[in-house]
Image (tube, rainbow, N blue to C red):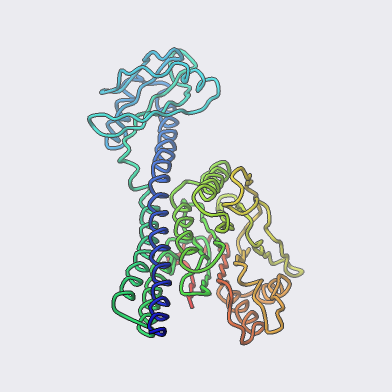
Length: 458
């Protein structure tokens, strides 16, 4: 009886905790979607409307304003409901067809003109939900003037789809955990329980690996080698490389505090945020996106779950690397010189994300021309220990990078792993391990189809 009672509680306690954890994680993810999606939609529509106002300014200097506004609305009738040019007193100067006759808040209009800012209103119309944004403009007979842009909320669906899909995949991992725990409680004991739970975590790992770029044929300006090895079945490390524009290649490497499924779910959220905002357009956008992600993590996660993140982009037109290091291990920038190898650590940016809501992060820039190499890594590399408890450390990492600087990015990655495995010996990794090596290609090479990206997952 005592033994049976012991086994009963041994089953109920972990099953109960698993159910509570899975339900809590699902609820948290759903709440984050409800809180974040409207904000992402508004930000996207504001950015698109701002670009449209600039285009209208270029077209409307010498033309009939009414015709210009109507042509702009007709060209994108699925995106914009109307355009209306207002004077500083809120009186219509020119408008497209179907323009609203609702007068804006005059005080807000004047404040917007004075501060050169944008303010928005959400309205429900027969045609659907609309975001009305007011932009200071140089158009109009009387100046200053304000452009009223009415954008359909539905037109932003495609822009936030990557964030929605990644959050859905992260939720599937939590649902998989919940289903496996309930199945164990109903049908299996001891060995069977462990086997099924292991299978579910393997499925969660497969879902997580799908978030990482195993292949990236759109990257044409860089040669890339990457590797991500979770310490457990799933982990909190993530990386990404993608073409942000024809002349800009963006890349990021982040590390969520902790390991396992909670870190993996938060990883999915941070990874989705990287793809759902135009942070790679300007330095202000980059810093603003970092601040918004930091506030989100501070508001929606426990203080024990913070994120270190290095994200930046290579501007091909200026051969410049622009980045923000948010408390992450400083990447190693390698330049081959006639007299040897020059190594620089990229540390500027700010503190980790998710601890201080008002933390400031600043973008920095470094020259990054053809042949220059950047080695990004998680703390699982430099904090790996050998049998004596000694850490691998920065000096050994830099030494491995220097010795392989003349080789390809994949060979550099392999050289670091070989040095790390030799140092660690038989000691199992205690933290997630991620490496990302990127090298700017000469222009003659970038014009060839089919870039190089080597990605390995243990």
